[in-house]
Amino acid sequence: MTGSPAQTLTDLFFTAIDRFADRQVVMRTRRNGGWTDISCRELRDDVRALSAALRTLGLQAGDRVALLSENRPEWAITDYACLAVRCADVPVYPTLPAGQIEYLLRDSGAVVICVSSAAQLEKIQSIRRGLPALRQVIVFDAGLEGPDVLSFRAVLERGRAAADQYPHWREEALEVTADDLATIIYTSGTTGEPKGVMLTHGNLASNAAAALTVLDVQGDDECLSFLPLSHIFERMAGHYVMLSAGVIINYCQAIDAVAADILNRRPTVLTSVPRVYEKVYARILEGAAASPLKARIFRWAKRAGERWAEQRLGVGPVRPLVALQRALADRLVFRKVRDRLGGRLRFCVSGGAPLAADIGRFFYAAGIPILEGYGLTETSPVITVNTLEAPRFGSVGRAVPGIEVRIAEDGEILTRGPHVMKGYFNKPEATAQAIDADGWFHTGDIGRFDDEGYLYITDRKKDIIVTAGGKNIAPQPIENRLRANPLIANAVMLGDRRKFPIALLVPDFDTLRAWAEAQGLRAEGDEAMVGLPEVRAKMELEAKKHLRDLAHFEVPKKFLVLPRDLSIERGELTPKLSVRRRAVEQNFRAEISALYNDSHQAERTDPPD
Picture 1 (cartoon, rainbow, N blue to C red):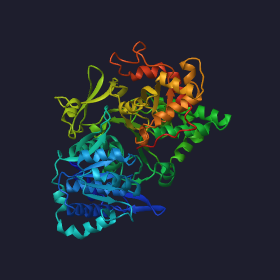
Picture 2: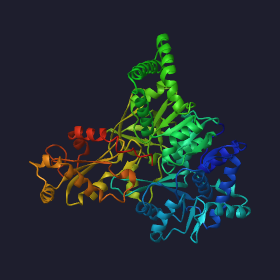
Picture 3: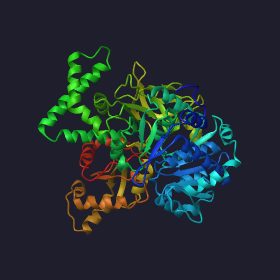
């Protein structure tokens, strides 16, 4: 990168457009069964056209535009056009049900929403009466326009026709300041009510600049965009950073197409959540177990690779014998691993949830370093990240330039700098709780530094569940729903750092015994009763009645019916009868492990949402 870092996102956009003006490909997307290239000039022209169209629709600086779409070029075009008009966009997870979308749109006061498809349009039409501020719906897919719905193509044509009315659109776009609001991203709170994180141009532009100093992305790289752009991780790492560096962005519009698209597009860099790497690793292990000989070769290669990695990242040089063994391991095993991922990957970035150190070590040995980082929506998001030169497995790296990080007396990780959000939208009290008088943002995570400044996340202070796929789930509202059932006396949601959430159910034993007797079921004691298949099926059926309008990733995929109530004496409840989640998980550790181990044949892991 040359020149001074961009101070705003519009500056970032125009700088990249100027720098790569002659590029014939800056983005690719699947259309009509094949890949379509989008040039830098086409991207610029579409952003200008949409900017003009939004102004003809009456949008003013400071208005909010919602985005309800899977990853595709139209998402990026809309984002940059909103920024150019000095509006703030409100990204919405495309997997959310209509009821949850309604809250976000009403709270943000969005006046326009862009949706991707008929399915997303149907959600909006079902809740539109409850959204008095919403004036216009724009749909990306063709053939869905109507009296109150405009097609994206028609809007672009409208903007091209009106472009001459705004001859100074670039200069006007660049009048935005670093403190101006760029986006509102909603994230779950511990009470379940989503909070709108207000990120400014300065927050995001500074974070992109900082990330570019530590991530070795170049103009001849290609990436695959499949994590949702509605999540800050993909938006920063796979959107702003990649455009700034001139990386070709290949949009994968369906999570089940990721494996095929990796082989087809052969990216050189990849950003993902740990669960994707875990799934790749699991498939590798499955293939290695195909025969005793393959298993022996794989185990030997893995050990050889780990010895090589340890010495390569250590103080001294790699010993000749270790280097030779690793070269043989590469020929027998690791080269095949790289080929399964397209054969060109230089490195990957992992965020959103913890990455197991063993997985990081294996992929490093295989020649595909995974650089684990750490951040939150409120921090734009990057706080720390490992580097290619000196990754440390199990850590989330060191602070990126310009960012302060310290550990509070109670072990909580605090951070301060230009990356910290402006605050929570319409929630000054929550903002004051999160950012103290000295400007330190309280992350809610517990951590420690090693002697060289690498940060390790050791625990969670907050009650939010973060699955291995990076999904944030507020457990308390879901538990409250379950407790509303007469058969359920208590419920505990678990799943932090796991593939998916589960629910532990405590029956109301009096009610359950009455039901069992009516069904002609007999059992000696409560433990024997909850062991009956009919009882477990009944409890699961009753629980699911209360979960129908949740987002897919929020729904527990497995249920464990407990043979007794939770108690203060066992440390499972506080004196106020609040659940101590970690104590419950510890006390039922064996049963919970069995539940997850038994899940592979029936459950699929949630894709990144």
